Amino acid sequence: MSFLEYCKNLPESDPDANRLRMLLSPKTDENLEEMARTAREITLRNFGRTIQLYTPMYLSNYCENECVYCGFRSGVKVKRSKLSLEEVEKEAQYISSTGLKHILILTGESEKHSPVSYLEDCVKVLNKYFCSIAIEVYPLTDEGYRTLINAGVDGLTLYQEVYDQHIYSDLHPAGPKRDYLFRLNAPERAAEQGIRTLNIGALLGLAEWREEMFFTGLHAKYLQDRYPEVEMSISVPRMKPFGGDFKPLCEVSDRDLVHAILALRIYLPRVGITLSTREDSLLRNNLVHLGVTKMSADTTTAVGGHTATGEASETVQFGISDDRSVDEVKAMLRESGFQPVLKDWINTSK
Image (tube, rainbow, N blue to C red):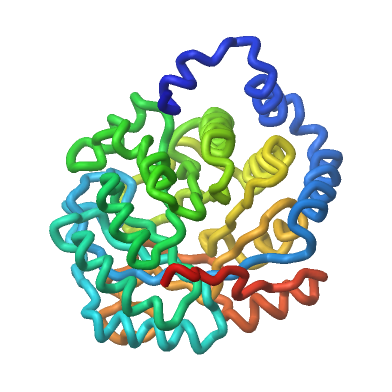
């Protein structure tokens, strides 16, 4: 049974679903302080005082989709770029020198310009520098995930973007990404092929946030129950400006974001929560105490942005709000009473 079938067959009286709706309800907005205390206790009990750090590496920004909210979409006139294997190694050497051993590699969604064979070659280079390599690329087939897992990939990040099918259709008018179900079922395909970690999420601002967080939470629980051997995480990214004229369809305030994180933490005590540098440093500092378990640092959304100069700024997908280095984020965590974790996994199959 797929997740969509699971949702269609979910009884209105399902206690788990109703509990999540209650946690996300406007009625609980007055109880955020109590929820924050509960979320903090749950997080400390299940994760201790640790925050895992990682950074993204953009390999390419070619894209075949027309997502109306994205700065990488095929119709946008931006400089398109793709790293050579030599440039991948240069980026890897720099990132590794910061102490980070977990990396997330990203591309625009173009199988033509970033085929599985190219990703496989990049992973083989990155294996020399990192103990954990996750991908955030276009949805793959079973064979594609199997190939990359065998090459050394152990994690998948994939946002459904928006769970509401009607809004999804309006926001994705053309390109392979228009296939809602192929994207929705991608985490299951990766899990079936033996992926170690899954990270899902909705892009907040594209639809009413409570409904989107409801289906994100249900999706994470469905995957956690179906694949208990897979480490589950949820990201809570908010829309960021990219230079186009698209405006978020729904406003998501800082308070709304906090409410979403608290509800997800209480509903899913053992699921990781990832917070990116889309959020500013002050907010990220405060959210460390409320359920977040994983953060990015020294982030750039430009292709090869850690080491490239000059034209690299022309390949930025969106702006970031927290540009602190790895050392600065580590210092903040230690001052907050947390231990920054740069390595907590070794892929012995490499």
